[in-house]
Length: 154
Image 1 (cartoon, helix red, strand yellow):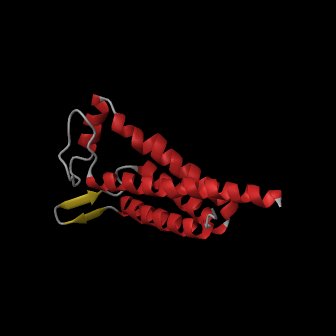
Image 2: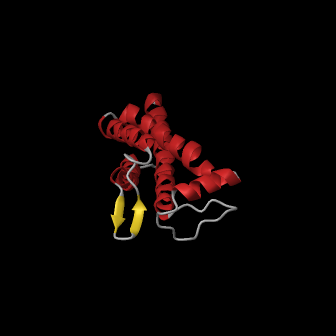
Image 3: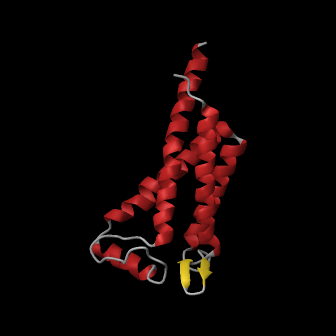
């Protein structure tokens, strides 16, 4: 079976681009009247500004220096999803209360809960986009390694 890395890479770029654009809303904040999607990280969560900068650098590296960039972006996405975002779903009661208090004014599809973490709409979409970016990231890195291994055998 021939793996077409160009198609995988294009899909990966589309997913990561969508994630980057969505995460950029965290930098600017987004409000329409009473509808608050996300507040600006510059005022509420300055660490997100640093994280956005790291994301920008790894994304540019992937586009311009693919051999090293694929690893940088993959590691960045894996840490963001698997170490930072997704473990929040296993928060303690205090963690859930803290999350609910911090994001009480943002839009929620489902009401917050005291027993399980129900993220606001912005963070729910962010988690989905991280997952959608991680899947082609894993496939692309694995397929790249297979192709490199085949080329070395020649």
